[in-house]
Length: 342
Image 1 (cartoon, rainbow, N blue to C red):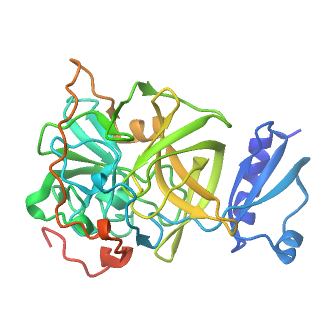
Image 2 (cartoon, one colour; image 1 turned 180 degrees about the vertical axis):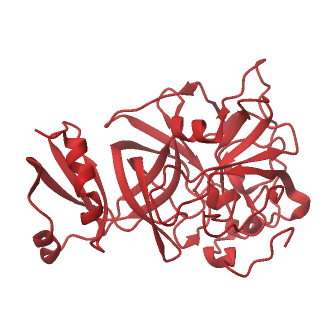
Image 3 (cartoon, rainbow, N blue to C red; image 1 turned 90 degrees about the vertical axis):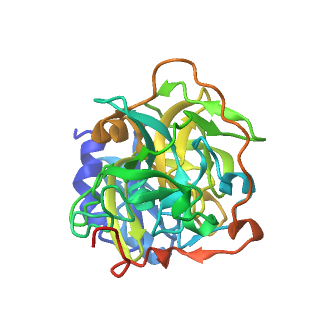
């Protein structure tokens, strides 16, 4: 009998060709293939087989996945929008020509030990694909992000490298790193102004509890739903495929992209880059597996002496989001934005 993973892979391209199908995964007991859809309808159920390769099929509604969906929302914890020096994970940051995302954490180059800032490609490299490069090496990275009042004088780093997002084939990550202008802190801003120290990297299984600290929704908790997720993500109308991802039941909204996903022992397990909400109000996130991110970017966690905890942030910097305003992700100005060196 064909393995369940092989059976899933054989049918993926066919089922993902159905507009309402968002992704495929495998149940925790590995006896069923899960087909994730934007909305369950009678017509859709008739299009999806009841079994694949001898394995039963479960249909689950999750909504439509988007990176920092549509709008960068107002933050529930304004401190994440403030100016932090040194920078820490879990706060507003982004390429100078976008709105804002989340600085995931501080890492270091595996070859040079140089400190780097980790986030998504679409946060730090403005959705640079294998067909269209929308950012340049050394572009300014701001903290806070532009929509939160960040200006060129708030540059905390320069774009170092990224993994181009593939348009015509499957992706493993949406990830990028920036050089740090200031000496950064390896901590992540947690709850009540407390800081989280990353203990290590971990490969996870379904069902374990996880948490993330994001620019918009702050510290939220959830659970790993699927560790074999293949799915579609809508990048401003361009739907792209990602394989071997983590699917998580966790609150994630516009601006949370780039958040580091941690287990209950503060080990890094994933890098969140897309979110969705179903018709029942449930939130879902898709995260790149952390070991894949670190391997492809050739980075590792900081090592060396015990770091000092960061000081209090410097306060509001003309924060639009703090007063509840929203701005379209279209501020990326795709196709027409002015990039340095052009």
